[in-house]
Amino acid sequence: MVPLALLAIAAGAFVAAGGPHFLSFENLAANRDRLAALVAEWGLAAAGAYIGLYALLTALSVPCAIVMTLSGGLLFGTWLGALCAVAGATLGATGVFVAARAGFAGLTGRAGPRVARLEAGFRKNAFNYLLVLRLIPIVPFWLVNLVPALLGVRLRTFIAATLIGIIPGTVVYASLGNGLGVAIGQPDLGILLRPSLFVPLALLAVLVLVPVFHKRRRSKETA
Image 1: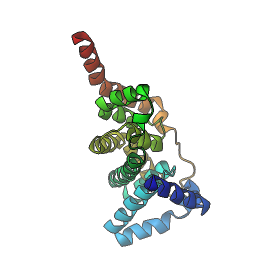
Image 2: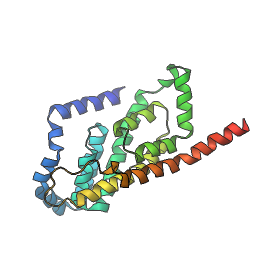
Image 3: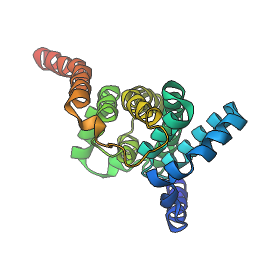
Image 4: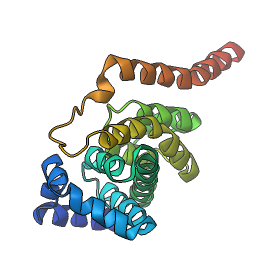
């Protein structure tokens, strides 16, 4: 449990030091010119620093994804900003997953047969389930980092599903950040829940689950 405890302590220290204050749209608007100047001066190093910061905040389970992704689009443009955001979020999520897997090792085996069946069912179609949870931003991002670790999902499966699943939403928010311009104000954070975007994402999620349902149907027919 040491890795998880260290992450929890670091997250608590970040909050106690007033870190969330700096992750606000108002603060981003106030420092836009300064940040843009740093990006112009540092070049690719600025992108690396952004990825590292995004990964660190994600590992600490700080609710920063929207602000950070908007910042990426604002500072680096839609596509480079989305690429950096995906890289940072995936790295940070992987760090939490690895720490949680170490802390939760063997826990499901002591939780009873019902949890064991849940674990077996989830692991059997882990990629599809994780991809759906990443595509539809209803379940908190930090929670999706922890539950697969508890259920024994493979590391490569977790990374692949996370990397692919967060791309659509990340591109949308990076594009929004790129188009904000000088005045940021309070952007529409419910953009992904608009029917024009949510419905295609939901249909894509259903499409991802089709092989799972087909596999279950065939297993029942052959039973």
